[in-house]
View 1 (cartoon, rainbow, N blue to C red):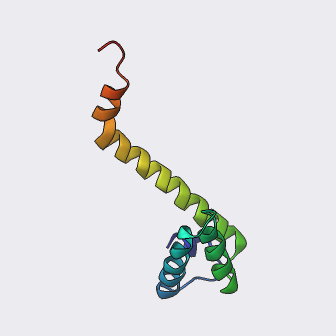
View 2 (tube, rainbow, N blue to C red):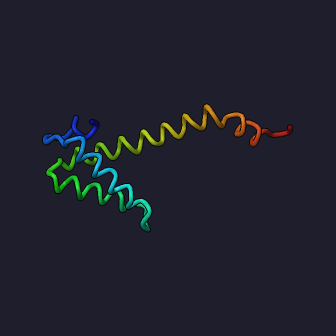
Length: 88
């Protein structure tokens, strides 16, 4: 949905899930960048705008950082607090 909001040519849900699933496999190849490259190539092959792809990838990365931070704050705060306590 995020990608379709920015793209001039919308992508079907089935195509989006296929591209995301196939490109997720590329994470396990060396370099940890190939899943982004693969996703970009597959979306460009379906005529999705360059800007829409970059925007959706950037928002995805920011959301992952935000969620990881929230999980750390809510579930790991007591561990972090006790680990970095000075003089106790």
